[in-house]
Length: 322
Image 1: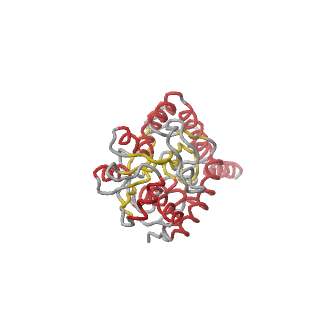
Image 2 (image 1 turned 90 degrees about the vertical axis):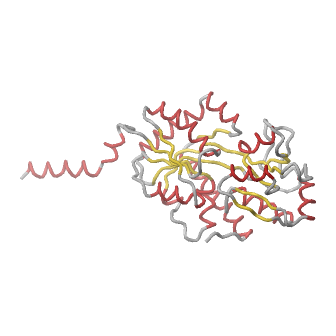
């Protein structure tokens, strides 16, 4: 009888601590990194750059899985329902992690309940760009132009994306009108802006500046709180007459909730190490991104504060998507 009780107790202990046993040799197979946007955009480029170096650090392949659509909800739902074992990760953004809860009344996932924070990946400023055929080369000129041309079409990477909300914030603050034209991502939106189908956009710096440098778009202001050392002559929107205006895009690594703490810590340390790598930092800088990093707790605090910020914006502007 004693032998039976001892065996039973050993089995119960083994059953109650599977995550420790499973996480001790993590990772022992390929890791899937889900990206909520199509190939070619900033988030995809960041995933592939960091993922390649992360694979070397962890000793296992990191496979980028693009699942675009529904303002990140398709990718987010997939990750939320995936096993919490550290082999499915999500490179989400401020849209999926902090904006969507205010935009959708029936969101098929909960950023706070379904995901475990790992690390902030990078921050990316946006830039106000206009088609060269539009007689606008500064924010004051844009204000005057929109006052006399309220039907001006502006582009975004989709309904509820930061460049959509940013323009709506600007319109409300300055009391002007413009017509929103959403696209399926920032890259196609910029192509339409270059062709003249739309006339203005708040676009991500790494996606927009190649067109600016080629003379196919005019950059008139950054949406960040401070000027960029890479573009010191480019003023911020706040400097140009819109007090307290700031919109900095960011992306972050998360995993399904319930992922073992040991795995999350190992991923955090590995990602932090990748983001501090001199080669990676240089490449991210060339792409217009600033590497971040930090602890899971810091990312959790950022998600909470940004959720409150964007809820206020969405409520003030009055945008709902369902």
